[in-house]
Amino acid sequence: MQTDAIDSSKSQSGTSELPPGAGLLIGILVVSSFVMILNETIMSVALPRLMTDLSITATTAQWLTTGFMLTMAVVIPTTGFLFQRFTLRQVFVASMSLFTVGTLFAATAPGFELLLTGRIVQASGTALMLPLLMNTVLNLVPAHRRGRMMGVISIVIAVAPAIGPTISGIILQALDWRWMFWLVLPIALVAFAVGFRLVKNVTPTSKPSFDAASVVLSALAFGGLVYGLSSIGHSAEGSSVPVWIPLVVGAVALAVFVQRQIARQDSDRALLNLRPFSTPTFSIGLGMLTISMMALFGALILLPLYLQNIRGLDTLTTGLLLLPGGLAMGVLAPFVGRVFDRVGPRPLVIPGSIVVSLALWLMTLLDADSALPMVVAIHCILMIGLATIMTPLMTSSLGSLPPQYYSHGSAIFSTIQQLAGAAGTALFVTVMSTTATSRIASGVGDVAANQDGIHTAFLCGGVVSLIAVAASFFIRKPTSQPG
Image 1: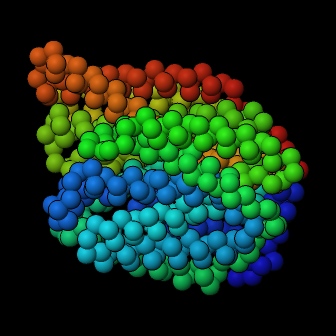
Image 2 (image 1 turned 60 degrees about the horizontal axis):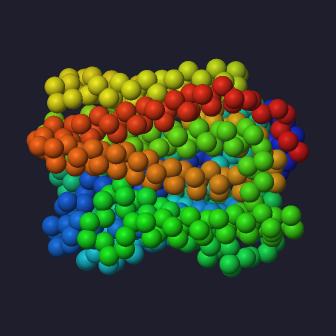
C-alpha cells in the first residue's frame, strides 16, 4: 500500500474519490480507536470485584476510571500541536505502543498500583488515537463523502463506551477480571502489527513552537475540571480534597489558558488554536454535541442505577438490557452518514434532537413497576436519536473549518467530549443524590427516595435537551470546503 503518495490536498480540492489506500488506512484507525475507547468504560462493572480481590476501598477503586479520564483530559488538548509536529505514522506508533504496553501492565498486575499504571498508560495512547482518526478523515476524505466516514467514527465515540459495561459483565460472569485485558491484548497487537506495516505519512507536518507553560495550564485546567466533575458524579467519599478545589483550580487555569492561546495564536505559537470557535457552524454544533454527550453519559450511569437499585437486577442482566440500544446506534450510524452526504445536517439534526428530548422525557415515567421491554424501547429511542444527530454535527462542525485548523478542531472536539461526559455524569448523579437524600430525610423509604431522585435527574436532562432542540434550527451545511 503506497500511501506515501497520498496527497491530502486532493480531498480538499473536491476530488470525488478517496486517495489510493485511504479506506484501508482509515479502517485500521477505526478498529484501533474502537478497542481503545471500549476500555474507557469496561472497568465500571468490575470495580466491586476489584475491591474484594485487591483489598481496596471504593474510593481507591474509582481511580481506575477517574485516572483514565484524567489522563485523556490532560493529553488530548496537546494533540493539535502533536499532529502538526509529527507524522501520522509516528503518532500511530506512539499511540498503539502506549496502549499495548498499558494493556499488558494491567493484565499482569499483581496489585492496584501496577493496574492503575497500566490504565494511565492505556489512556495516554487512547487520547492520541481518536483525534488522529478524525484529523485523518478530514484531510483525506472528500467533503461530500465525509458523512459516511463520520458515521463510522460516531460508532467509536458512542457505541464503544455504551457496550463496555455489557462486555465487562459477560467476561466477569465466567472469568477473572484480568481477562478483560488479556482478551483485548491480541486485538491490540494485531492492529499494531498491521498498522505498523501499512500506515504511512499522509498528512502535512510543520515545526510549531512548543509552549511548556500552555501544557501545564492545559493539564491544570482540563484535569482539574474533569477530576472535580468526576468526583461529584462518583461521590468521592473519604477524599481529602473537597470537590470545589479542583473545580476552582480548573476554572482559573482554563481562563488563563484561553487568554494565553489567544495571545499566541496570531503568531502561530498557540498550543491549541482557538480560531475554530469563530466559525458559527463549529461553535453551535459543538454546543449541541456537548449536550448530546451529557445525555449519553448521564443515561449510561442512571439507567444501570435504576435497573439495579430500583428493579433489583444484577449487572449482567442490566448490561444485556442496555445492549440493544448500543447495537441500534451502531447499525444506524453509517446509514445516517450516507443520508447526510445527500441532504445535509438540518433534515437529520432537527428531528434527531427532538427524538433525544422525547426519550429523556419518557425516562421520567419510569418507576418500580415499569415493564422492562418499555425500558429497553426508551433506551433504543434515545440511542437512535443520538445516532441521528452525532454524525451530522461532527461532520458539519469540523467540515466548516479551514484545513489548517483541522488538527486543532479535532483536539477541541475530543477535549469537550471528555468534559461533557464528566459534566453529564456529575449533573445527573448530583441531582439524583440530592433529591434522594432530601426524600430520605423527610421519611420516605430508600427505594422510593432513589426512584424520586432518578425521576428528577431525568427531568433535568429533559429540560436541558430542549436547548439542543432550539439550537438545531441554527445548524447549517458547510459551504464549499474552505481553503
